[in-house]
Image (cartoon, rainbow, N blue to C red; front, side, top):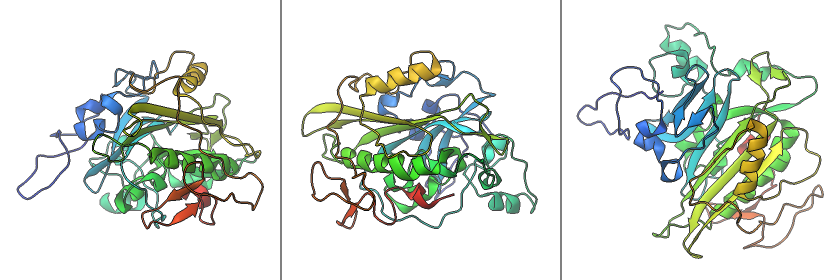
Length: 351
């Protein structure tokens, strides 16, 4: 859904298209400030779900332009039946922040037909609803993640990771449960965490013609079909994947890369960099139809150079800097190891 109002004098709203009443967005292009999170406005097209940017089943899937502090921060295609996102898409435009805020998790009021345009915590919604709890049927809530699965230890796993965000407000916006899936803790804090660090290193090479960092990232989850459900409400996806594409002004060419991994306990393996084409083949296996993640500008058979993996031996860190290192530059200029105490991803300490 999108929410908006006609601006009053003095308002500064980064919303290019306004709704006079509640409206579900059928296309991300209906909101230009949301469409910008996709290269050339081209969204992924899991057939039967999202075709040419249009949702095929409005009762099952919803497009969310993730609004926080009056600014659209990223975009999500959300599965209201399984109560997990299909994917979240964001643009990478600056050096990411290096600190996790103390931020309660939020939900999307519009999924419950509430006339509130921004993500809110359940407590905030209660106060706005005459101090009465609202019924939440179409998305995950905090109580779901308080439940347990005997065979799994689970985290709230970000799709748009907070430590890929360029500023505090965008970091906070990633803490919405419409941007999270139940992720096996060892996988989240192990292979997936290290992969996210490598992606951020690779994206530092993405420069547009103005020599500014500019890259596009889509991260998704494929639901399981084995009735493995958290709190009898939230599907625990069997596969997570991410892909990125950008123009490298130095090499004067487009580059792309992808990773995926099964959502199960980390067994010490790392996630290897794959081509975008290989990911689309993998997603075809999951959806039984051809899946296109990015615009045709993005090479399907060529990826960026593999960033050196984090040392698998516990407690041992590789040395070195520059290309091939597992270090990344922070806004302070400090270089920080991917597996330092606070982790390379803000999910690493979260239940």
